[in-house]
Length: 256
Ligand SMILES: [Ca+2]
Ligand SMILES: [Ca+2]
Ligand SMILES: [Ca+2]
Ligand SMILES: [Ca+2]
Image 1 (tube, rainbow, N blue to C red):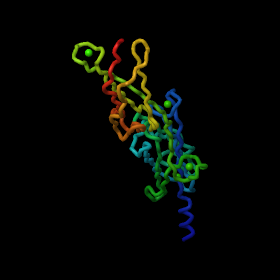
Image 2 (image 1 turned 180 degrees about the vertical axis):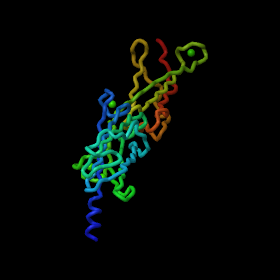
Image 3 (image 1 turned 45 degrees about the vertical axis):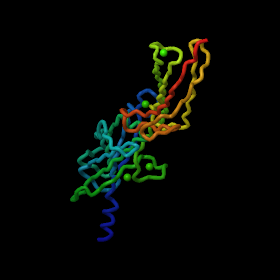
Image 4 (image 1 turned 120 degrees about the vertical axis):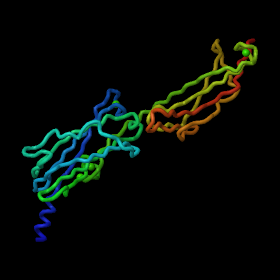
């Protein structure tokens, strides 16, 4: 009896594997707008026919936020005699699912996916289950590891400089007026940038060099950034990441 029970347990096996392929949107980087095509295989590795195959898929971004598949999983192939309702011994079901990488998800390091497959052996209900592995047995985990698509780091820096004039009271812009410059440095990529430096060049209309009266001064930042380091945007396309450099009291050189 004990031997028979052991034999039964040994043969209630199902194995789920999930692999990923990325269809690039043409920019050469894995990121926003690319389509991840997931292929899920479910193999009955025991000796007993299983029924009622069901899949539960979990998709998250690199910060652990939940994402939703764009399509699927849909059954795309079944070996002879098998279907989602009946999986023959040694039978294989193949499913396809897709996810189009959102802007927010592309600002995290990766897209992570796994599926849990559940099936029933004769006379039982949902008693056979497996968590997918990533199809790569050379990574040290041959059992239940997530299928990870790494987002490519794309550093993008945007700097803007605006000017306003504080008039000295004579009604026109000229000698003695003060030009106030505001420099905004924004991290528009998906990686943290460090060692930020600002080199300023000021010339008159003849191309001759002028000297700033003072500045630039670090004025402030948002989203946890600081002088010299600007954190990448995460999970929001609406919040700007800005460091301000304020250059007050810049006097124009008087014409000679
Ligand atoms: Ca791309
Ligand atoms: Ca693996
Ligand atoms: Ca597994
Ligand atoms: Ca003036």
